[in-house]
Image 1 (cartoon, each protein chain N blue to C red):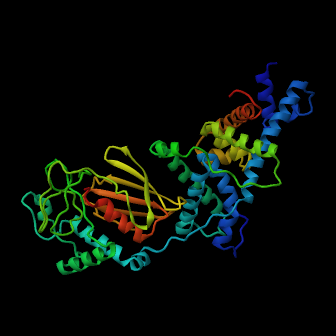
Image 2: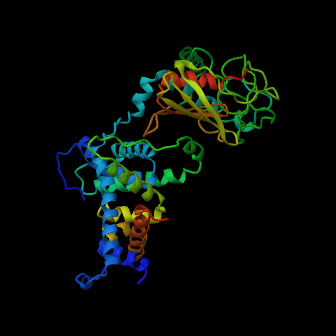
Length: 278
Length: 169
């Protein structure tokens, strides 16, 4: 009988898969040794599992109801409303190149009024300490809804915040996107002492940024990608279940903040990351 | 599966299930830190939409959910390869002064060997040998035939043993 046969028979014995009638049959020393080794392996596996009993329990944070989150983080909710409204084609004014689909999109019953939009923009700007600025296509001509906006930058729109849509066409008071504008660039310096450790393009138009805090104890992973669905809500701010994750979408860029990050930090980071590179 | 206690709170249920789920998740994803994240995700899912802890199927629900979460994680592993490469070593297990070096080494080795087994062998072996699930229960959970499960458990143990005993798997 080969060693492999001994192993197989020993495994069947230890697992209880063998015939009960064979249990009392005499075994040769090689198979007996294989049985003992097999039993030792099983014991080790169970011991590995048993050590889990001594580990600390997880810290469970109950997911907060979304409504409460929005109330608590009112300014970020306001940002979401602004961006959703813009994504729905309700931005004030229109450009020559805006598609008919956008221009004629009927307002939803929940759409905020122009005055409400302005008030929300003010709230948002005060929260992030500046303007939350989107980026625009680098070279592709805008073609309205339905086309994925490239995640390339254009100079800031001096006319005011321009969020959502991804078409990059001039909004009210804004300038048209300039070809050849700089690409996305992660700022080296961010609020709350987060510092950039690594920036990598993990897929076309998709970047991963790794930040750590000043003490180097906490890390923050940020994924930035070109939003392929400009007709979707152009911005979302929320906490997704399981871990702290804040997703901000603005004008063709999406940013997911994952890790030890506060809403306030995320807002500031979003502002910094979506601002046009120098 | 749950020895039902009608007064059991969600927190108590979660605490009681933690070691078991932690072991399962570490077996599935083979990375301690990731397993902790998935453990959190599992419990959050439970608190959000899980059954009452006193329900008979609460444990099953939790295990099934953890498995789904782990499999989703594994499916996304390829996309996270770069991040994984940055993590050179899994988080060290808590040190216990009472453990001698041999025991420590033994636990590390069995963990490594378990991680080397392909998932199709690793999962049924663990569920049967450690979790005590019957072949039929594993077959139901994994949608694989009972005889195939038995074969995989047996083969998994042989391979694990070769590795653990210093073989050249």
